[in-house]
Amino acid sequence: MFTIQHPLKALGLATLLCTGTLAQAADPVTDAMQTANAPYRMALFKTNGTSQAEALQALNQAQQAWDKLNTQVGAKPAAPYDRDTAFAASVAAVTKVYTKALTEINANDLKAAHNTLEDAREIMAAMRQRNNVVVFSDHMNAYHAVMEHIIVDGNTTLAQPKGLLLMTGQAGALSYLAKRLTSQAPESLTKNTEFTGLVDAVTKSVNALDAALLNQDMAAVKEAIGKLKGPYSKLFSKFG
Image (cartoon, rainbow, N blue to C red; front, side, top):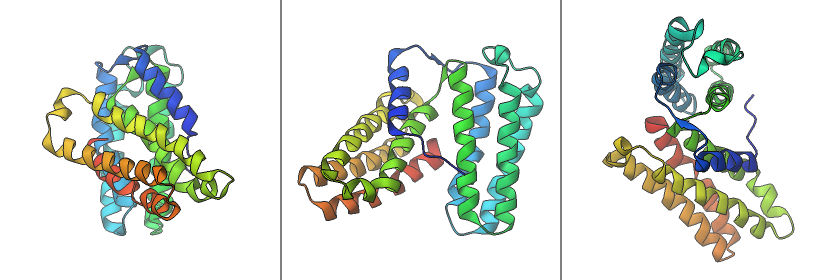
């Protein structure tokens, strides 16, 4: 089951990304992971829907892509992953996630499969982080972690004394990470009109939450929180 990353942990990763201590990806293993990431994103997207057939097809494609990566680099990865003693175990862990998700899709439990597949995101991100590699997906993941915390725990946060102030702090973190979806995007994305349109939609959803908090409007805050996931999901499925 997917465990939501604490927002402070996500901000810690974002700080690392800001310092320049992580190298931009330019190696065959990361390239292979990014290639396998595209069908993985679609599997996540489809398991968040209602079509068992579409989810199954997407997962099969994700499994095939990951199996290809395993065949190409699993036994002897190139630098910088060549000194990562946990590399093979992480590759196997992603395979295990896909196997579990397949069982859940076959049982037509798409929600469970979606939550299971979230674990693969964490495993792949940890693989890169261990080896001082950063890709645009890491900025997407940092935003996602804080967004999910707000969505899942938002009502609990707002019910606390000074709940609106507490939420304002979390929204500030989300706003910062949203800006990095543009500032840290490669030129190939920033010149892509579809990408910029989807990022603008994410930014607008965060701005709506900020405006509601500024007005101390509890009903508007809850409504804005409920509208965060849609724009992000569209961006992630295409470019995450």
